[in-house]
Length: 611
Ligand code: F6R
Picture 1 (cartoon, rainbow, N blue to C red):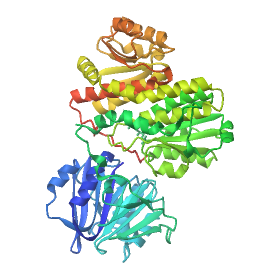
Picture 2: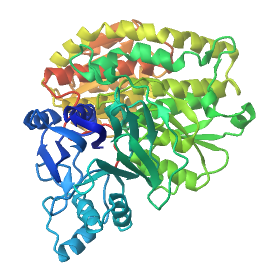
Picture 3: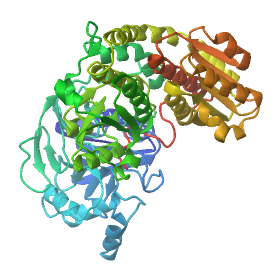
Picture 4: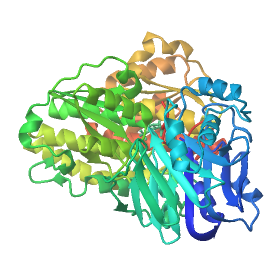
């Protein structure tokens, strides 16, 4: 969480350069923002609660800086307030620092510092870092950072400046992402490369324990423990400056929903092998005989990545006949998991930076387990720490609520299921049949997106409902959970996702004429069972929205629903690729109707880099 950017220029540059970068980081946290720069021998700090634009409006036009650091915050310790916003400074304001992460032992460090006369201005854990570094600063900022951090427990990505060393920025990480970049204007450090898109030509992802020292375009990557890091790998930055443009859409979320047909095609193009009814996934770096040894697969993820893993687990079990489960990463980590040589683990994550997922993967790796990544962001921590896996190629996802990455993750897992399935019991005919259907999915999603008006109408119809169940069975059960998650996070409406079968075991007690239900109910192998559950809800006067695929059962559904939305038809296994888009559109239209800040839902941030 939190966005960090730092810049050290070859010459003075307008503060706008930092603010533009900060604006692009706003999806990582947006409750307060701040900037520090050097003016003559002093540090200047401007910070406030609120959005980056509010800070920008307050900043004098003429601010020029040789070096500066800026931050957009997602609060962990201390409420979103002016005082708690970053950058934080030491007492005499000789050190300024921005931080992403959590300092676990900040209370004891703070108490010790207070005994030595330090006075604190905020409730944050971060402020102790500024005071600690200040205490050890005797000429070299990097040495002060090294010494101070020896006392620190927890996670951090930090960028620090000192009034005594004009133009210098020191940055280091443990557990929170940081990237260093260089371009014509100087060097940058940021928590996400998107902040320097169009400005840096080459970047290096810092590893835990790396320490970067930047002065203009002179940059050194050292180790916190001492010495240089000779292994740092630089690569070209291929993010265009337009990466964060909305391209005419009112929200990133809608733009990304609309991008799904093309994004999905980018995931399977070049990977499916029509003739042999299978897929090719070179990134797994596995020989055919390696696949034969796998007897269990575990998919570790959080939030929407967990939902797509639930779908993927069914696909792999169904098609490859390998026992596969999706696991909530933070729960799995602490469950003393069984790990053996025949198991294959995937860390599933859009950002590749989710701390809960990374920690679960590391626990499996510690036990000797084989872990691969299914990620969107190239060279992210999960991609680097696994070294093998499947990139989902969804393109940049900016909206806090994940959309296109859910579809592409499901596709990556389907390709894996096809690949392994065709090595086992999946017939050539079934493999080819599925591939033919997969190739039609982008067009079917395009047809579905045209139905946006139906979802708007549904949102209007249910506008007064304050409680929703989302229900489905089989492949539609995870989609019901995803629909509930989306409605909660962007429309702030209470929603729960259930297997429709579970209804009668308790949740049905709440159903009455004010409690709405969305049934994800394609005409699949469990249709008649789900339909019975739907009728049970109707018998208790519950309002119902039905989402189905094709016309086969529309009439029956219409008899028991307030509204039926009919999506294109597809194979049962592929229905999640359509029904997911449907629940996204419903949540989007509902949130839009309620006037919610769809791209920046309250209390949330993209990339949850703290546990
Ligand atoms: C929901 C959402 C979150 C993320 C979760 C995992 O719309 O975006 O639930 O899915 O925080 O993030 P990644 O996939 O980056 O690991």
